[in-house]
Image (cartoon, rainbow, N blue to C red; front, top):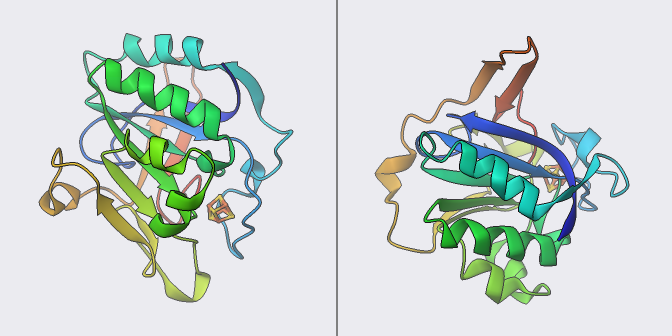
Length: 186
Ligand code: SF4
């Protein structure tokens, strides 16, 4: 299934518990003032990608990563692709964490919301609010909530997640990720 991709990182430690692949969806209309990733807002930006190809790339890293984190941009604004990707990750046994600017109640009411949430272990939910900035662990601002939707993780699993991370790739490229000051989404 086609989707609009902002970025992909095969192994990160600052986007959830343990070592995780990270997929940043392209496109977000929520327009939080102070968003750290405005380049991910344009729904026509980024690049077209096939969820099957993306799954293949993630599985290449499966021996080292314990799960996938999905961020953006706003993943719930590409609901069909989000559901497709999550179902593929679930079939592979990888844990699933999703960052969204929507609250949990809002996400439940979105198209495919209940089906998507049924595939998610952890939902980090809520708009980024600059006046309530904290930039610690998985949380960009204090209004955001971490919802454990399955029993796979416990609150203690979120302690000590680095707030930012610099990843050096073999080709010399660099990825800056994590929550403030270098967070790539939400
Ligand atoms: S913080 Fe997240 S929800 Fe808010 S505008 Fe940025 S990408 Fe969208």
